[in-house]
Amino acid sequence: MTFSKRSLITLVILAIITTATYYFFARRGITYIWHWERIPEMLFYHGPKSADDPVVRLRMGILMIGFVLTLKISIASTFFGIIIGTVVGIARLSNEPMTKGLSLAYVEVIRNTPLLVQIYIIYFFVGSMLRLSAFAAGTAALSIFAGAYVAEIVRAGIQSIHKGQMEASRSLGMTYAQAMRYIILPQAFKRIIPPLAGQFISLIKDSSLVSVIALADLMFQGQQAVARTYHAFEIYFTVAFLYLVMTFTLSMATQYIEKRLAISD
Amino acid sequence: MIKARNIYKTFKTTDRREVKALVNFSTDIKKGEVVVIIGPSGSGKSTFLRCLNRLDEIDSGEIIIDGVNINDKKANINKIREEIGMVFQLFNLFPHKTVFENVALALIVVRKKSKEEALEIARGLLNKVGILEKENVYPAQLSGGQQQRVAIARALAMHPKIMMFDEATSALDPEMIGEVLEVMKTLAREGMTMVVVTHEMGFAREVSDRVVFMDEGQIVEEGTAEHFFTNPIHERTKLFLSQIL
Ligand SMILES: Nc1ncnc2c1ncn2[C@@H]1O[C@H](COP(=O)(O)OP(=O)(O)OP(=O)(O)O)[C@@H](O)[C@H]1O
Ligand SMILES: [Mg+2]
Image (cartoon, rainbow over all chains, first blue to last red; front, side, top):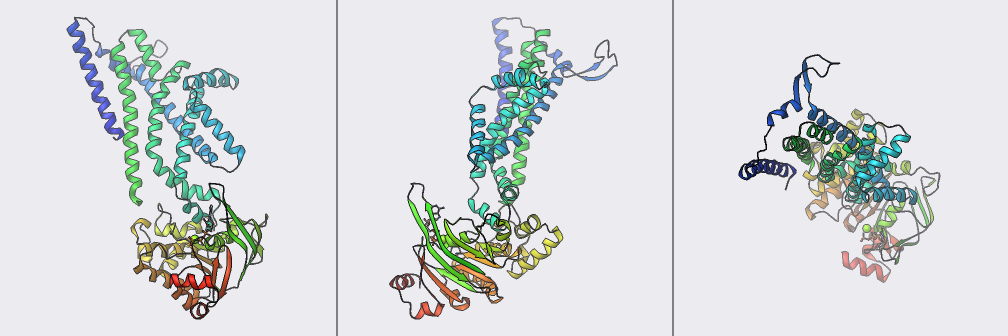
């Protein structure tokens, strides 16, 4: 099943749950007063921000601010995750015991400990030593986390390329690095697009964990909004929907890229 | 041009057995000479070629190409490889690159030529192997024979002094073998130094200066193609020839 189909189904299920909740409350005679009308202003509103910033204009609401931060941190850690993952993935295949050992240790440690713990360690320990902002610490934690998974995907991708490709490149006088850059990696990346996309979709969702270090991401802002207004259902449905917008867009983009790259097959 | 002296090469298989691929192997190949290597499967033919451009590393012995000891620590292996073109049984074209890019890539990346210069050289070579009209298609859209001709053009692009062919026609349908052999014969007649692993004895007879019969990592018998057709000496040679002819 493709990602976009899966996302569509998720969307349908979300709609069904919403309807079912309504129906259930009505049947049980629970008088939950829905306040969907409060949601739009949590996305965008027209007005002043505060007494300090009284200019009346279109502004992002609490959830949209979180959405943008989640987007930023996801894009940043996807970017660094690919860089770390590619370097470590190549290092995993090195003949040099030190390089091989260190890269393996990194992958195993990261993949076998909870992301939440990694976030705390990087934020409280590394982050305070290096005076990192919460955003930098959160991005670092997510990048290091994603990097370990990407490394394994990249390694498998490289290994899936016939060894004749490397031999042909080397026999033309290319260095190992040139052969990797021009011949092996482009073919490997094409092959690993689906698992990579899956990894980054997970990363978008996992990024919600950075809310624990008071980073104002979508999850954190949602919690804040609920604490302020008590409209838990409406807000969390909206939060879920906004995550879905990001993951769905990524799936669609992936499919487009896959189609474009299929030209040489 | 090539001096191979007392080459030993042993492989360790995955189940930890040792396979002696080359045993005290020596030969000299002169400039412009066309040498055909024949021998049963596993006799070390590919290994010899692969040691010449260090895709495999010899255990002991000495290989001197154009005065350079290629296994010397100071030797620049990438420079040496530029001088030795290699054509593989399974073509090994770059599937994500067009025909033109396959031929031009090393010129641009290794030789640092401009795209225009590379285009000109690539066009010339694609024309030479008779496949210029396909310069913008991807390898998957070509027949086996066409792919192998592109692979030859790709190797020639670096302007090598030596060309090696490792069973370049064995993966081809019979009707395509001729077109590839034709290109190889042209090269031979132009004076290219060639080391050719093949069982095409017609090719050997037409253009080779010497045929080498290998078995178990050693040279059993060598001579002209005519010699192999008319009076091979060793029993192993006779047996082998009876199987391929
Ligand atoms: N990378 C390797 N690992 C282990 N054994 C190898 C390796 N490469 C070659 N060998 C072994 O070395 C021996 C010589 O192999 P080689 O490929 O040179 O033979 P060949 O004469 O080219 O045979 P063929 O006609 O089948 O291509 C064989 O027994 C082969 O199994
Ligand atoms: Mg072979």
